[in-house]
Length: 234
Ligand code: ATP
Image 1 (tube, rainbow, N blue to C red):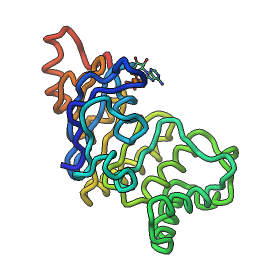
Image 2 (spheres, helix red, strand yellow):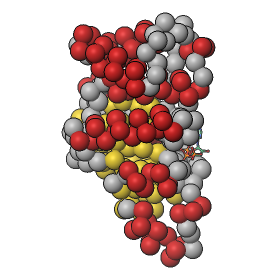
Image 3 (cartoon, protein in one colour):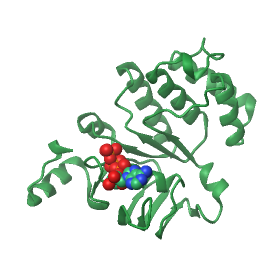
């Protein structure tokens, strides 16, 4: 399997937010990470991308642990946060070049991919723009273009359905589908279950820093009423 999160305990201080979390994402699989506000989705993602170190447990990507080889691990991951993180002093062109350097991409081939992506997201005439010139949705599109420029094995996408126009959501879903077919794995955090259920192969439901249940949305729906809960609340 591509991503394996095994018995992870962790958080921001000595008091753990994640309490023994285990789940995996297989090659070519799109897994939805869902749960109420504060359930631990972002904290889980922060551990997977290496921003936080587990107190206990392990996270491996294609057999590589982040502590073993941070660079090799991180080059396999592309992360699209819900709130775009861009360098104010760099243009769109420079963001793309920075991504090419960080992921050791062949510049010539990467620019061919970049031009396609820029056209898809209608950013092709904005290469010399700085982040201050972009709207929030446009900044999200810049993050998407940078992520899909890479040959990452794991894409982590935080709440892609809010803030993007429907055309861009559709373009993003097509990119996800293409990368899935090429064998990449996708972990997507979302509250928009009606859209997500059309695309996710499986869901991992977090509750209070633990994996409450996993499966398809109908399997989750069947499991939850035992606890007097409903997916409508998520
Ligand atoms: P949401 O749907 O609102 O984005 P989430 O499932 O992503 O929620 P997290 O952001 O992972 O939830 O939060 C899980 C817990 O960790 C919460 O109790 C929250 O208060 C705590 N937490 C989140 N960020 C920090 C931080 N930087 N420092 C300390 N505690 C934090």
